[in-house]
Image (cartoon, rainbow, N blue to C red; front, side, top):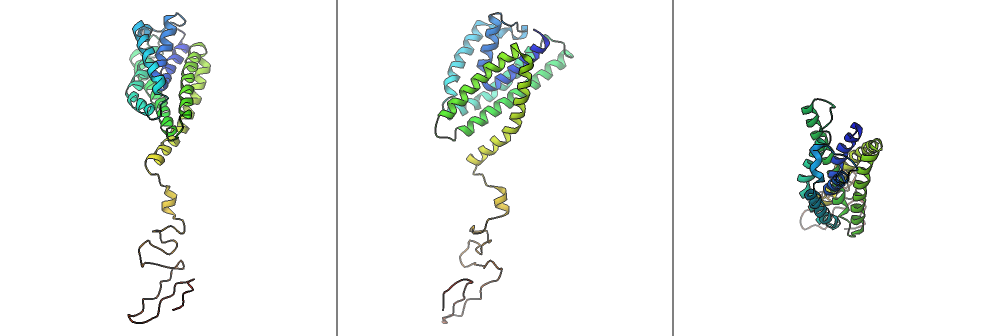
Length: 252
């Protein structure tokens, strides 16, 4: 395998693992089993019949679980502890036969880089699904799941047959994730955590009870007009005088 292709496969396997680990194993293992590509010895296990059969079964299960609102988020939560380590290991395995740098340093770099890519992709996927699940209809969930599958198959095909195009696309995807993840996180907080706009808390709008900006503090009898003046003291018991509030047409 050419060095550039090996690099693209390493990054692609980590990226694909964050989206759909079992599809990634099926694609790379299947291509190696049919002789389309030659994976390094450290990744030869992916083309094992047993590994391919297990990956096919788990992909079949995930294909349906990933399209059920709520269940897909539980599935993603469980796979946080599977996709990220698997992505790191596959990235390290893909560059195992290369001599970019010292062997130990190369392995550590691949593990860290692969883990970070898998973690970022997984976070974007899981967060997007959590936001989509707030919609009562299931069609957006189905569409996103199918789109993710297409992305994995198409992305890994590019990594193998056109590594330059894949690396450019991966860079653009990374920029998208950096821009998208904070927005997803705010959306999740707003829905599940009773989000309150900090600007509203610092600068209450007129007329909001309890803020005092429209003359009320929210406590009975504690009324203050907007001009800052205070009403006159209540008249002595037995009198008929009533303190008038500004703007009131009540005549004692």
